[in-house]
Structure formats: structure tokens, C-alpha cells
Image (cartoon, rainbow, N blue to C red; front, side, top):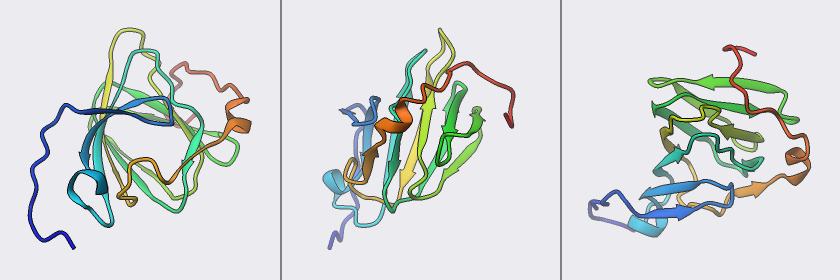
Length: 142
């Protein structure tokens, strides 16, 4: 059991299965965390993650800068816009596709998840990827 505090310098990046790069933070791999992880996700202008879900793990997101959007649900039937200062919750096992529709402004968000391992709970969903959801910014609630 980890019994000491640890400081992690920001900067090291990790390419996720989801198609985005992550700025590594608190993980099992970095500090020996047992029940959580926290990291940053920068989403470049126009970038989109692959359709995926986190098996048996919840995700909480806090948007620092830029406006992103997320298709979510069993068939990606729901759409949410996440603006700076918003929190966004994704229950365990819920398929989702986050993206940044802005052609010039990056998105930066803090991600916390109940899986202490960065990539072990990620399951790509190619059948949902085939739905090819649009990446245009819609009005909130659409």
C-alpha cells in the first residue's frame, strides 16, 4: 500500500487507445493509486476521440478551457456541450465520443476516473464508430 504523498510534474504525454493524447497525472503507474486517476486531456482543434467506453468505471470531467461536445448513450443518441467551468459525468459502461468542433481553439479538461490504470478499462466500440456522428457544435441540450 502506498503510504507517502507524491508530486507529479505536468508534461509527460501518453497516447490513449481513444485517439487522444493525455497529460499524465495521478495513476497506478505514476504513484501507485488504487482507486482513482486524474489527468489532463487536451483536445486539439477539430479532433475527435474514437467511440469507446470505460468498463466498470465512472468518469468525471471538468472543463478548464475551450468548448467541447460529447455524443453519448448506447447508440450515441445523446449530445452534450461542455463549456469552461462545467462538470460532466459519464457513468460506467456508457459509450461516448468527445470532440472539439472549434477549428482554432484547443480544449483542456481535467479527467478523474475510478480506474487507477490509464488504459485498462478502455474498450473501443468500432460498431458505434461506424455511425460517424457529426462534429459540429449544436445548441445545448440537443
